[in-house]
Image (cartoon, helix red, strand yellow):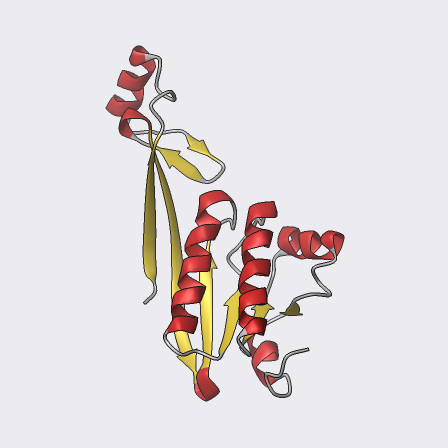
Length: 163
């Protein structure tokens, strides 16, 4: 559990300019697009590190590093679901190192929350940075999720009962 996750997709149409490709390969400086590094022959590498720790009372904390957007969000969903499938009842997603959430990231979190609630489990969010916090507020999802300033605050909240 925890550690880097890597997803590969092939985009053959991305490297159409062979001289440009040669320069990129020679320098080793691949373009970064929305947090993703384009690699050799148009392969897009998406990497998200997610740390997992277990606390008392069957509380699991997942801490993703990087933007929660696009295909990366699916890795977060898979990781959370894996933790639930291993018998976890309570999960806190620590968003301290997530500088950005887009609509796909928000949809993934909403999907995981619905599944957790349907199964009598809990999902809490902690420590959102300014952009994710604003996204939750503008979309009204701050009323849907249990969002806390810190992981400690999420833990000490009386019982992990569903709202």
